[in-house]
Image (tube, rainbow, N blue to C red):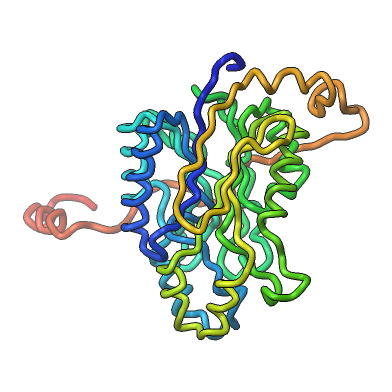
Length: 348
């Protein structure tokens, strides 16, 4: 376990090119190079950065959102796919570890999507592929439930690394499963805004406050660093949502924003931004700081009762069907058919 090195981490507090997978991929590649040029060993992007976070189910009735869902499904990406391979090449060229949130599509369906996150190594390899366990609130109108296949900690050159997506950071068992694999650096990804009530009401959800509570709690309990990346609302996003009407867009304009931050193992904020524009938030961290606090509360060691509590994590990747038998396909390309026709004695 790496526990002696100082590294530089980066949280990308940035907006996507909303609903444009190609342009957002290009922007992400530029930001990867920029972070590396600043000396960062890793960069974390926000939730569903590629191609942007689908906020419209919160601000408009579903019957008015079909066009946006169709565009979003079209802009969602495959793993692996051309956009992901561009990101892998960018990570390899810059020699930097990358965490990025994506909306993932699948060959199994033209409309099934997952809220996913990829960890890409500094050599360009995909190290982990996590699908959000449960879509939160209005996200259920967009994404399917994920599985535990990506619920794991990676032993990387920057330390033992785990990540969760947005509301998963409220799930004690998901968090504990990462703590129990010796997590030293935790990545938390969030959207730019989270409308739950009219923005001017007293009940409006304070996203920044919620992020601080969750991120600080995990760092304090895990005795780990936390790199939190939230997205940004920009004019491009507002323009794309404008067909929903001025009332809907006004909710986005005035709802509390998310924050990006870096937190130490004591639960204290090392660096933070709530900027309304793109910013790469960086900080140097020393993984040795994870050790001493374990004397006080090591919840995956002596500060627990495993004779009383028992947790099992199923890491099976869930598929819609399990095909059994040979993989022979009774389909023939035209050139093969012509060749067979010229040989009447050939068997099929």
